[in-house]
Image 1 (spheres, rainbow, N blue to C red):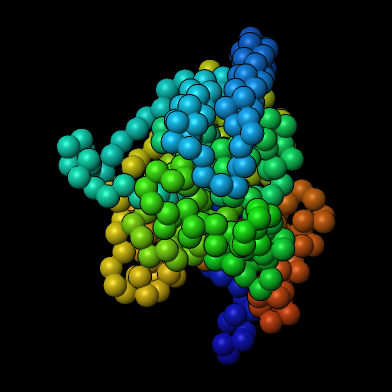
Image 2: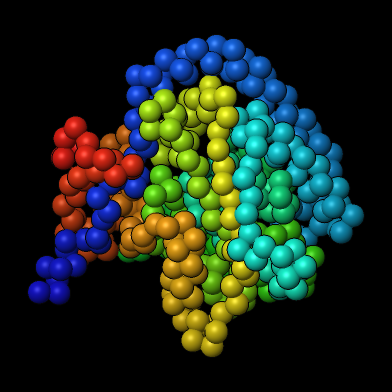
Amino acid sequence: DNKRQLDKGPEWPPFNPFVRQPTTILGKAKMIATGSVLVPTRAFGAIVTLTLALVFANIACLGCDTSKPYSPLRRRVLFGGCRIFARVLLFFYGYVWIHETYEITNSEERKKQPCPSLVVCNHIGFAELLYLAAKDGCCFVSKEENRALPFIGRLSEKMQSIFVDRVAGGSSSAHSMSSGSSSNAGGSATDKILERARAPPGTWPPLAVCPEGTTTTGRCIIHMHTGAFRACLPVQPVVVSMPFSPVHGYDPSFCRANIVAHILCLMTQPMNHLHVKHLAVYTPNDAEKADAKLYANNVRGKMAEALSVETYELTWADKLRFDSSETNRELGRRLLAERHNGVVPPLPVFTHDSFGRPPESAKDK
């Protein structure tokens, strides 16, 4: 009975959390009308910003070993400039205004909290990462494929991000960040995260981690890997949402999308919305310090409560089954088979779209 239950796979929401909401005909007409005016200017501005940012970062890091801590002066110069470039880039992507709130509304009370080295955030796209870079000067835990991206790959290296090979770290857990393979010298992804978390304050830049390990549409929070929680130290939870109109809007979540096409579509919108809420710093209790999985789940629960969404034990491997590439879909099936005793769970049937409305076909996947 337990084996049969396991073979059914994890519970799914009534909507697909890994597929973007389709753009309506009205939305596409709006994109054509506004994009013809906005995209040329924004695309030019974004390319110039990325070029200047890369030139600046190369000069600021001249002669440096990115695998070792920078001097305090070099770090202030580098991340001071990168914070400006990140916010300008958000502007050209259509994030003209960012709505920020805090669980602790009193600024004096916020200053009394611990100052964690790790920031944990739900993962919808790249806007929240640019925000954290602009707001706190964060570097990131990023998938290895991002190293090859024009501009972004080199900038991420200069900002001392940690790159993870999700396939090599896959095994039965489908890329558990708790044991993921790191392409950086000096050990696994967890080793690098623990090194940053336990270093004296100011040694490294703040590290932003998306423990889900992949993007979703933001309508739920999926399984969180434990790498960021194994240090048994306080973390700063941040939750983001990106509301858009179901009538004429464009879904800004980065799911099943070509990155260039997605950026251009974002640029067609007069304004994209990014809502960010900084929760209170989460300090683990003794039970959570002894159990990283419990710690991760409890932080996830707080984040889901702040977003008013549910949690599900889904992973990157589950997402791969909806990828546009047959190679990735096959990888997803292989990882799931490893996890479920050689049996690939059946595909779910979705009864609603992201807005809770019945789709044209209840079997739409």
